Length: 426
Ligand code: FDA
Ligand code: NAD
Image (cartoon, rainbow, N blue to C red; front, side, top):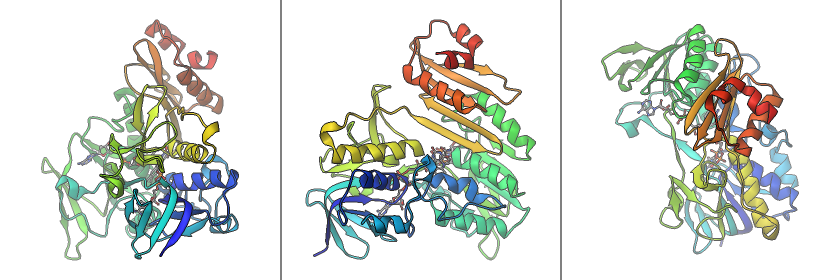
């Protein structure tokens, strides 16, 4: 016999923390809710790991960034969970889930049963081995998904002050780590296969701005290629990265950020999957009505686009978690999730926000030689996406509102002429 709960949250990341806060606000009873997490600490704001955590001066450390400080809410410390009667099973991997029997089996061999399950298992970092590169298990090759990875990355960086670092991948992890490592006075070279950085979101024009800025800080870019192998010393440490064209980069450390895969393996064959995630309806409910999915692992309907999406960003994790709990605890008062996708990043003194979808025709605006510029995406004559670098709080709110309204755009040249003013005046 194992333990039994009304609600179990599987996974202890961002979504779990925000779900816990919502459960407590809606009056969950003591002993009714349990969070099971492989990590040994209570939920924290993962975005800090590539930003404040990596700073050389006064770095951010737990407990300061436990959820839910990222949304200016309460900071949920272990004491908070204790006071609210929320049980924590930390440092414990769930090995299997049986949705028919409503049970979970932990790595310690314990069976935990639930009435309702919220799957918040997030995602794992893709490994170079999965792309056929052998030998990346060296101690100076770092990935970045959790606080243990971030702690290791800092230790490796501190073991080679002022040294060379090669960053594999030109996405979010690559860009944010490159900036943080330059601030640590490392010599950074970024290697990625695309023609420009942040290819999933940025246009070439936007990417050029950030690449030029990074170059002015000493970052080197090697684009359009991937690594083929590592060379190591007799201690097994990587000493150089060999690229597909034969170029050899001498290095003291390597950081890899080549994308993620949602952690769905526990429920494969039991729940419907779509777009790599667990398919849920507007209440965040999966194909089994007792199981909900939230955060990076959930593929949910985005009303605004009229299609489903799986998003890998913190705002969506926070809000989808809150929505799932509302659906569970007040089913008659909860409507379908109506989410406006929101992504952001902060590097050096730069800061951008993006709302909506980056499809269709692009209209750039603003001063690409200065510090405030952006872009709109227009699909089938409607504004569907907005990007802004260097905006004020009010300007970011304006692009969010404009994107949510999805206005008709008759004339792209006029939109370009009005630029940010279009959103501000809408
Ligand atoms: P999350 O990954 O946070 O949590 C999943 C949890 O489940 C983990 O604790 C994991 O250990 C646990 N788990 C998984 N399988 C398990 C099992 N079988 N048994 C037990 N536990 C299990 N986004 C953004 O919008 N802006 C930003 O600036 C950043 N910055 C950023 C930096 C870094 C370094 C990363 C890695 C990610 C970001 N993100 C981001 C993305 C954002 O952090 C991400 O979208 C959310 O953390 C997703 O929240 P989830 O709760 O879904 O997964
Ligand atoms: P990503 O998808 O943003 O970027 C992956 C990058 O890997 C691609 O841009 C590409 O350049 C590169 N790549 C792919 N295959 C490769 C290969 N075989 N060899 C070399 N390079 C290859 O993923 P990420 O940067 O690893 O980020 C991981 C997750 O963390 C994402 O979910 C992301 O949303 C999240 N994250 C978000 C933020 C943010 O929103 N500000 C910040 C950090 C991390």
